[in-house]
Length: 178
Length: 166
Image (cartoon, rainbow over all chains, first blue to last red; front, side):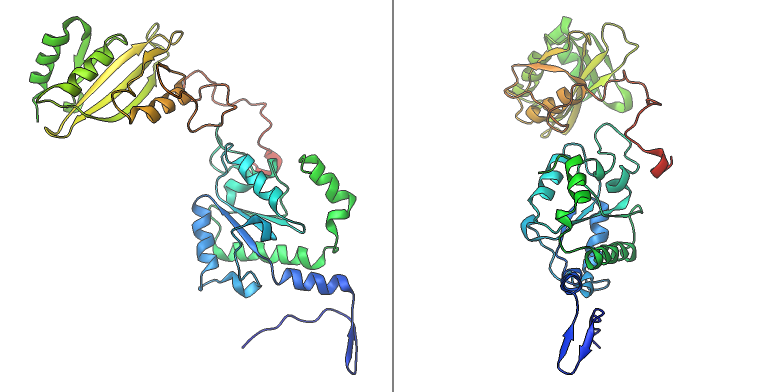
């Protein structure tokens, strides 16, 4: 049985349905997120399970993992990011078009994890802004899916032009992006 | 297999004064030498008619901070594939003058291993074609595997305890 997305609140009548454009766009975005998997280590293996048929993130509209940042909406960072990898991750983020979200999966991406050492970035939020953190070492596919659903919630409820809000611009400013 | 004693006798006969010490931990013949002789020994063993040590399995460094004047040791692991014999050669260096000639002209594989040794211990391999960092970020201005750092700075701010309580 196919479960369809529920229609947003609106005014319904014979032959018409009226609602806010924001809500329609949000609904469309949240159910067609194209993730870019940035998988560097064991959490990436867990993501592969999440992506495959058993857990299947396609059920949430992420049918097409985009291996080009230019067509991706969601950057999923899974695994240890070394300091040398930091600039590459940042460049990947910069290449993504708005609207874009970042999901940080696993202890290493969130905080450096057990690698409290000279060569490992202590959390990707030191180089790019993060929307949702998924804890775990590694997290189970269910947790990754929940993280994805939190991103969907953000996409559904955010204003259509988040990029124009002063808060968002100040956030990017603080990371010296743009 | 070449017997350890036979190999050691050969090395002492051929290189006499440059063999400073020898040992056989776990049956692996280990000879100590100085940095000015190490290339001679390597190339002699490489070119030898029957020994033919033509595979450099590993090249690395160790830091012994308490060993004043010879803090750094460069370790060469050789393997003779035809006789299936292994040999280890060690050369000690002063940490204030960590220079040793490159083995990359003899063994192509030494190129990256020397870069790694430079990256982590700051050993300068003179004559190396491209002695730059290989694993760490280029901006790093220290040699992380040297035993000269305190374990952790209690005032460090790159971990936020409030969020990731350790």
